[in-house]
Every structure is written in C-alpha cells, then in structure tokens.
Image 1: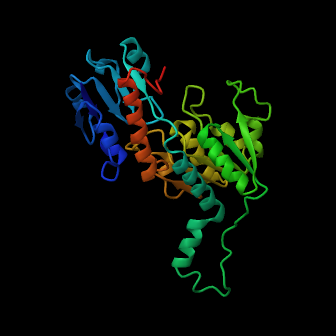
Image 2 (image 1 turned 135 degrees about the horizontal axis):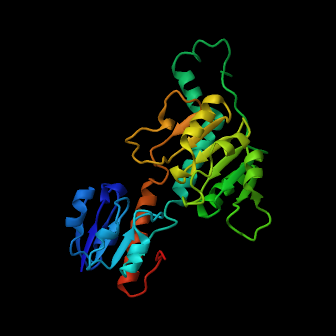
Image 3 (image 1 turned 180 degrees about the horizontal axis):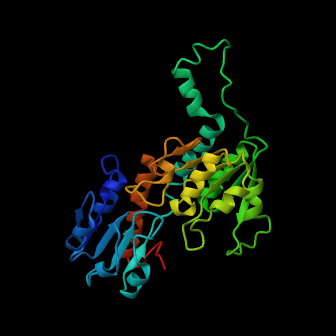
Length: 316
C-alpha cells in the first residue's frame, strides 16, 4: 500500500517526529507542501492520503484511494459527501491542541486586560525613566475577579477556558445557540450573554449556522468595556464589523488568532496596525510542540485502526 503526506511542513516537521506515522507498514511519500497543480501527480496510485490544509475535491478521489486522514479537527478541506460516495474513509483528529489553545486564549485575555503591550512599550521608550512617580498609570487595568466570562462553544476548548476563568473567580456563562437544543437550562441565550459578558470567547466550529455569528448587530450588544476573543475559526466573526467596532470604541479590545482567509494574501481589515486594542496572531494558538506531536500520534492511531479494519474518528 502507498501512503502520502501532502503538507508535512504545516506540522513543523523539523521539531516533530513523524515516525509514528511513517513507521506504519506503507510505502510513504512525504512532501513538505503541495500546490494544487501538484496534487494529481502526488496522490496517483495512493491508497492513503494525509492532509492538513491541502484541499481534496471530488476530482481528486482516484480509484485507488481508500483513506483520507485529516491532520486537524476541521474537515472542510475534504469533500466529505464525495468521499463517502466513493467509499473513501475520512478521519480527523480532535483534542490534540486543547492545552495549547486554552493557554493562548488566556494569553490574549490577560494581555488585553493588563494592557501588557502598552506598558511594555512605555517602560522601554523612556516614559518610565522620565516619570515623576515610581510607576505609570497611563492605561486602565481592571481585575478579572467578579467579571463575567461568556463562552460560545462548550466542547473541550470552551470547558478548558471556563476552568481557568473560574480560577480567576470569574462568573462563567455558556451560550445557548438557537439552532441547537442542549437540554441544559443553565445556558444563556446568546443575545443575553453578549450583553452581560465582560469577555466573550469563541470556541465553536464554523458551520453554515455559525458563519458571521458575531457581526455588527452582535458587537453593538456588547459592553463598551468588553473583550472579544476568537481562537476558533475566522469566519465566525464579520471582520470589517469588528474593525469598525474597535475603531469606534464600541468594545474595549479583541484578540484574534484566525482570519477568514489564511494566509491573508488579499489583505484583511484586522491587519490595520492603527486599530486600537487589537492583538492578531497567525493561527498560532495550536502550535505548541507538544500539541503538534500529539496530533501526529493521534493521526497514526487513526490510520492504524483503519488498517486493522476498525476505523476510529471517522467523519460521517
């Protein structure tokens, strides 16, 4: 059997050991990255294809292909319906980056709450040295204790963020999304959560229902003192509306790790360096080395289960 890894560089192959995968009994071809024009040639004759971000559409489902392992949680890189119709098993990997994403989410919350970047600059640019007092009070800082943390999406990531929030003595509210019946009457309607939360953190998948879940209307509901954090999917937030809200001071700040287009080759309104109180990171919340190695191990487990005749984490 032939196996192909299409974009090993997206896992950081220099500091991640791929042997849990490549030691499996297949003839492996490992590519750092694969451009669309290279895809047909590279997967020709392959029984197994592993991809992180290389798109695989209906035309790429060769007669030999039996298994696609997505090296991520989101599976929008594969046409699942076409794969199912062709008898191709598709699996994904979940839970590998929980610790990494949770700590990144809190790094953003804490940096914005403490005005960390602003005070760092103030210490280095001479303002502290020239101050008449022992400290600077140039930027407002507030404590998180007693504030409300609003979580939208309460899987492993949302639960992990909520746990840290409780450790800061925050009240935690979980959003009830109108198209989902959770059976949990302790959850808050989304509109109420947006009005009451001091920090809103997104941890839900991108679906037809959640696309632009946070737009102009939702941003105007939030407190002017509130923060919005998105370490989930770029399409959850209407990016121009967020840029406008920050520019107008309608919310106090935002932390964004994901954009609608990645990499943002066509630009993005959130990449304006003049926007106030905004932290943007390049989809790096998940990239702790431990998380990436865990991803490889779990992907290998998925493939091993498939080869043994019992597919695990199959996307249906």
